[in-house]
Length: 617
Image 1 (cartoon, rainbow, N blue to C red):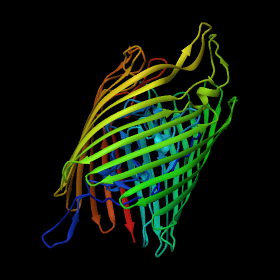
Image 2 (cartoon, rainbow, N blue to C red):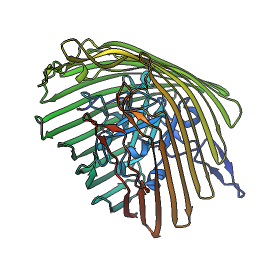
Image 3 (cartoon, one colour):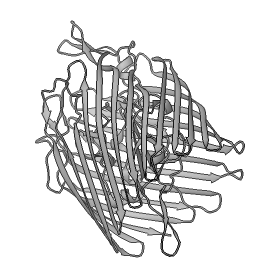
Image 4 (tube, rainbow, N blue to C red):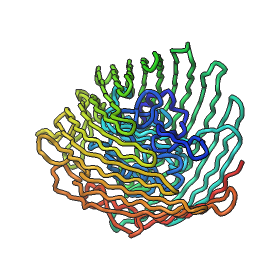
């Protein structure tokens, strides 16, 4: 637990770009119409590109989709997406793990407004503590991105963008409540004209929660959060911006509760040096602080703080582009555990070359990291995209990545248990290393699109617990894995209808035992359909996942499941709207993880939420 490496920023990390399409057409009056089927993303490359241009497998969850579907937790945005497995220890602020393309939860990089956030001690991101109501847009990039972002971007990258200020004055207030005595209130303002604009938004939510284990008691959750952002356009065409996000509260679990605080702060300056040279500097801080009160064990504190400085330089040459830069990252951990080391420093040099030759795009990326804890690592990537015609595109890519050992894995002090065994970190651990090959093909048309991707990911030096003859447990580089998969996605927009469907198949295998990797489902399916009828919107989402095993030996099998969520919205007066959501309509009982005693963590049953919102200008 503790915070992470506050990571890299993108050229446009603090500017949520509007949805634009690569496919435009004119209506009968000659007005240019733009379909919103090929949105711009900034996470897949070092700079803005449409989804079709990115040469990666990308899913974008837009502001409109988030407002329409009104998820209660951020993990609901990710659940069922292609290549994503979400593992939860219960609902309402309980521990969440996100597995991307079969890789572990430590191998999915999470960023908020361009700032990396994860626990430097456990290695996982605090997904459960980010209030989804303060998120305006989400980008999910699947595939290795260590050559752009350094450690941990093995399976992919998820980036959440918070509320962006707009020109003019506007504000909003929303109140909601529902099942399990859940209530929330949020408000915000955005203001500014000319060169400076700002936004402030805040939220408070509480829930008595529901049982997180079979026959257990309700476990509650409380969260207060806010986002502040200022953007100033410079006279020379550059931009200066600052954004602060903080979320804090308390979550209960079986046997105790945790006080938490997560925070990201980013200060960025982007300025043109010449017509062909643009420079961007980011300074950021990320914090993950957790104090846990246990009924049966000693209380504990795990805090991490990461300071990052990143400098990017973008050179354009006609239709070609070169990005070069450097990044400095300093991780610090503190708390009740006496780690053998409490900080580490990482320096990196990185570059990306993007070439365009008519219908063909080439992209090369290279990064060198030097970490005082685990040494030097070089990662790279090469990708090719070719437009077969105006609607169809082929892409092929190869990339390397690595997952850094955590402070727990490297430096946890020797701990002796009452049953005679013991555990300690292993300072000789090497990072996990991976190679990924991907082949993709897509079609994008005026009202619909489809995309298919095939990939193979090979991981060496997997870190796992190893036990010696004395009963001492320690992490070691003992395993190798091979993950093969197929992802298909499609969507359409027409006449008030909006639909999206995806299906993913994967085979995540330990190459020594031929067992499936723990907690990974081999099949996922997601179907979302919405219809706008004048002032009303109606919709639903069906998600199904296949069975998984909770142990490496594949003895403890957790059944697959399917859930249906329904929603309705009503614009009942100027500026006024209401929304009703019913999650898990059929009250399906399911679990994605087991406890050490063999009991299962269970998800919430049928959950209804009603909210009323007023937007004003």
